[in-house]
Image 1 (tube, rainbow, N blue to C red):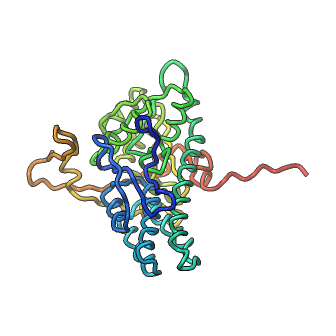
Image 2 (cartoon, rainbow, N blue to C red):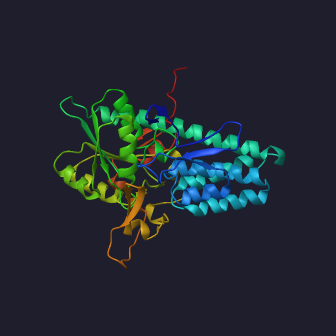
Image 3 (tube, rainbow, N blue to C red):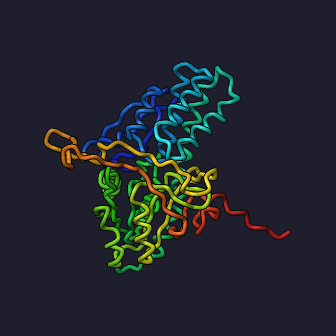
Length: 361
């Protein structure tokens, strides 16, 4: 997507070379920096430290991590060890496990001498497919925004966290329909939750939307319900890090509260996700492991000073903090889901391609 006058993916490989680059999301929005992922250790650290984040992008990064591990030594033990270490970096996002399982299946029957090239080729395919899947999500969800346009004022969309192209390889999930609508000339405006404690909305979503020219306004996390009460939100669109078989949605902490407010005020609440984020092995959201991150993310705040990006303490000295990274929104609060296969009111309706229309014989 657009960064100034240039177009980027969030992660990419120099073709025919074992050199992977990604945008360092811990430096945004105050500095735009690209870093190199050249080893398995680099990939694990990038995922754990959230230099890359967002379920689809984590999966893509893990795929390249497997390829880099094999490029270093290329033994079956290296493949298993790489998959284990990458999975442990961030266990909640199911795309991580999905990508690792796909890499292991693909490489299971590949001769040792061809395994490294096959691993990089498969990681490239995962990235290319992710971009295509997310653009399809945008196309399918565009109608949700179009049908609310009346010409008298912008369509106001509220989103939470960052489910844009920085969270994927390109386009994004929840932001893809917003980009599609804006590019199609629909008058659209986005309310962007700041998304404490890491402020992905403030630092990433705002940065993305502003670079693309989409009208947007940053709000504190607690303002969404107030705006819904005043009729200033037409619909909510969020992403998902894992969605279970019954349609429960695990997403960034605070999503559940937005869904409750939307339900109370009759505001449609949609979830945009690739099918790789659906975990059919889990019956409901209560089975999802919730990542507990470090206290420092809550007790400090990132910002910029004259000397550049910095962190400052915001709590009383000696304060303790809890930091659950995700919560679960029950399916009963979800108006509909959008995947690469279409839009529907249940997760089952969008988890597979629609059957082809019958033809007369």
